[in-house]
Length: 80
Image 1 (tube, rainbow, N blue to C red):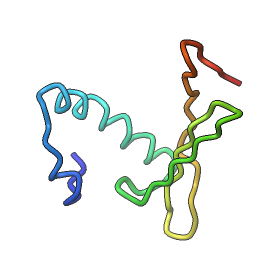
Image 2 (image 1 turned 120 degrees about the vertical axis):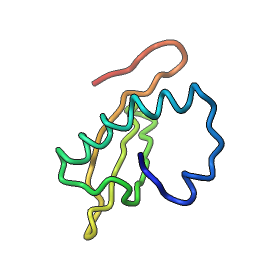
Image 3 (image 1 turned 180 degrees about the vertical axis):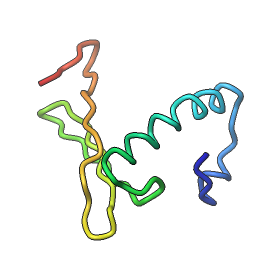
Image 4 (image 1 turned 90 degrees about the vertical axis):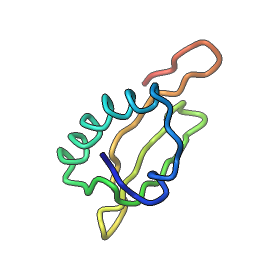
């Protein structure tokens, strides 16, 4: 599990602990596949008109796109 001081201070419910245990290996694999350091600085950008949320990770020199997520607007998914 990722152990930063800020992350470790967040109180967790059993539900959150189960979710973290399920999602953490997936995130770590995505970082490895993109050759990015898990735990590096992250920048989140939301593109309102395109209905996209982007997650960028600092690779030490610049920010690299990790993943894009479609954004739910109202009750409809908008995907490109």
